Image 1 (cartoon, rainbow, N blue to C red):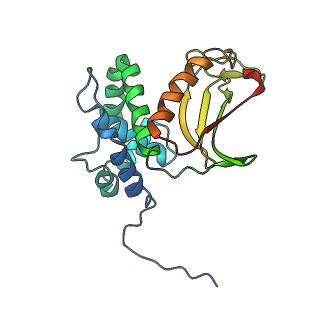
Image 2: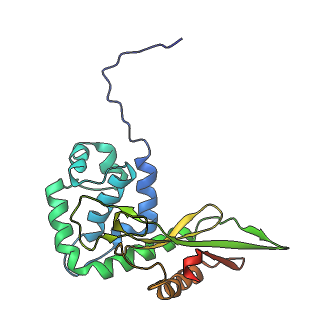
Length: 214
């Protein structure tokens, strides 16, 4: 039997935010710096917590402005408005390469603490590293560098790398829709190997790529 109870108490649907906030803190996201904007890490943390909730728009941040859980999850003195976050991210866009490198360091820092499961290859156990592209459908948009993908629609053609049998994302690269999967992939793998070395695997890595990379 279904029982419905009425209450005047505040009911939160964001119980996972404190955990996400702890992970963001452990990764060191709030310590990220930009030569173009003070407090860049806090701005990026705002967007990460919004993405954890499945929100991709700046406007979604407005719902969190008066929410104590969002504020406490990031240990913030205040939550920025959507307009402020948009302006600050625009200001930081000229420093995007440095910011992406720092975010990648944060990601590797978190994976260093993860327990990565392997797969059996004959008599050996190895840590899988899966690499492949995945076309994104951005039809009927005018986004920068979209193109005609091999899937027959217009969009992007990003490259992703996952590690462990669990499939943790270790690296990604946004690419134009018309870019061939192999273009730039050797360089991508080179940087990926450096990240894998930083994680410090206790077993050999097994790279598994799509046949388009042959």
